[in-house]
Amino acid sequence: MNRTYTATGINLKSIPLGENDRIITILTKELGLVRAVAPGARKAKSRLGGRSELFVVNNLLLSKGRSLDRITQAETIATYPGLSGSLGKLAAGQYLAELVLAQAMDEQPQEQLFYLLSEHLSRLQAVDSAATYPVLACLNHGTYHLLAVAGLAPQALACCLTRRPLLPQIGVADWRVGFSIPGGGTVSLEAIAEEGPKQGSSLTPITHYLNAIELTLLQQLASPTLSDTIPDSPKLRSAWISLEKVLRQYAQYHLGRSIRSAQLIETFIASFAIDEVYS
View 1 (spheres, rainbow, N blue to C red):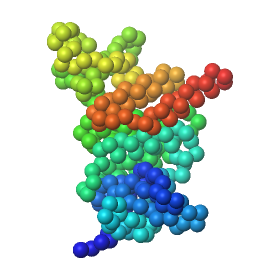
View 2: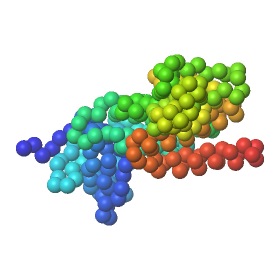
View 3: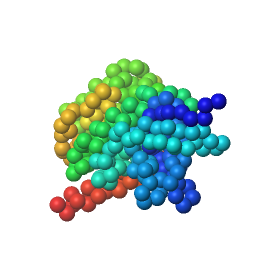
View 4: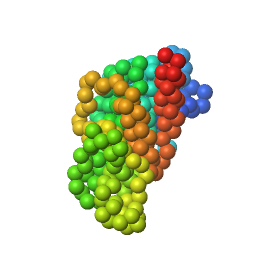
């Protein structure tokens, strides 16, 4: 029986082990999630030190162990250094990593998930760190796409009850659409009225209300890419913040686990609110 194997993976989580080692949780293309010991990674001159950092992509040679495999060799092929220089980018990257950890499987190829995460980390690294919205836009975009890979993306283009298309009424100030986390997405308020308050509410309980701008942005998240230039305005900022909270609660409900990195996102958003008050 062959005790060694190779894989290409991106580091999603790292915890100390003993005095010098680390346990790394790695998303690999070939074998899904792999948890392996990086021996000596915490030593100052360790060859595995930098290769065991968060979001580093390595070609790996691993050896099987009784409870945990061991990293024998690692050759770095990609890194995302731009994430560590910004609280918002780092928090958003960790947030996406948590979503991957919640859905990736062990001992099964996860190539689509691997490339999707890599793509969204690259986009996140490239956006302007000095503004809230591009970071939140990229985070929301990545969240939606990761939910879509799991078959959990919220319905955004049509009403969950009637399946009729939903067209945001941008020019109508008080226009709203319902959003149901248990029901799986958007719900026309007219549909609720047609079904009857009690029946409609029991089928798809409304947990949030989205205005026209928020629905427009939510519908755009299904697209492969967002605009290269994300506009800067108070209304869009508010919409991206609202959507992050809606998608976070939606993801936590359907994945059955909390997103701990969301606390860092809250800190990031709050830091911009304080800067705007004193600017």
